Image 1 (spheres, one colour):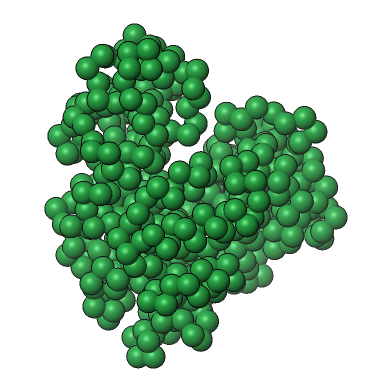
Image 2: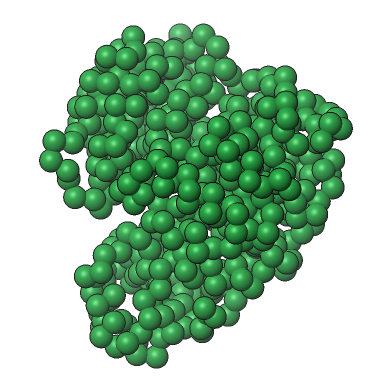
Length: 458
């Protein structure tokens, strides 16, 4: 589908929709949008000259629009969606719009169950440092890139591609990057095999592929893609890291490409999972035509996106916020702390995300939190889902209690967590909030409390 000139975006303040709006606006298209509440992204777009309104009103849908773009979070009975259909204006899913956008470029589409935003940001950073002037669309704000989207002057467009609604297989990138395949979004795919097949289809229809083969399911896909660039810690990976060393916020490793040493390299990001993300980014840069050694030199430029191991306070007590919200992500994040901050007491504050996710994998969080000394669990963040009878955060609490030796607290109201933390923390603690909802407000308030000096570090 060729993109038109005038679009209205419903839910324009979301991370994915706001980035798309930024790109379309930068291309000279006429853009407007709406959202349920005002947000920093809405503020930024408004400052650029994009009309943004709070609330959804069918009366704002002009009959001369080329389309109304919606995210998967927008229901079919939304007033603006209903008005668009009544006026015979096409209602376009966000990923369909992204697919049309990418057809205008040589594209790098990043998929995977975990690490998409970080890997996409790393690729954009490397290509920018190497002079490619890439365009990019990322599902998180990236401080070092100045935002979550940018229209560059080069031929390459780097995009994070979300698999949650199942539409991502309609995108056919020049280069497909697959970070890993996990068990998630079962409300869409119904089975783990269906998820694996969808990722496989996405990779097979791309021009080239970069595959992280430490993941057993990605390795299975690689067997069908003989010309892929494979990455990982595995000895048979084309782009390989070994002798990984963890030094708090910095991780270093010996790097080689197809048997040739590229020397010892480091990234400003903790954890083995971020080494794998960086390898995927390097592989994508090489697939796009970059010299491997030059791409490795550019690793010094990368930094993590917003809410990806984001440090809020580091003064006797370390306070970090992270977007991790699946068992695999939580486990990897806690392992990164254990590896980089040996001997610290880890206090993890977890807000489960979505009833459907809690239903399908709630028991798995028991194992995931084995790396924490203290675990605080709050109520589920619904993300606009309806409550599922019998599903609650209490099930996760039970799983952690049964599986770990952690000290566990269930504090349903997250607004009460800060008071509990103030009484609980002690010098040397590493406190981390994990979750894709608004749990970051807890650690932000705690960090402000510590900055004010109300807590005495012995």
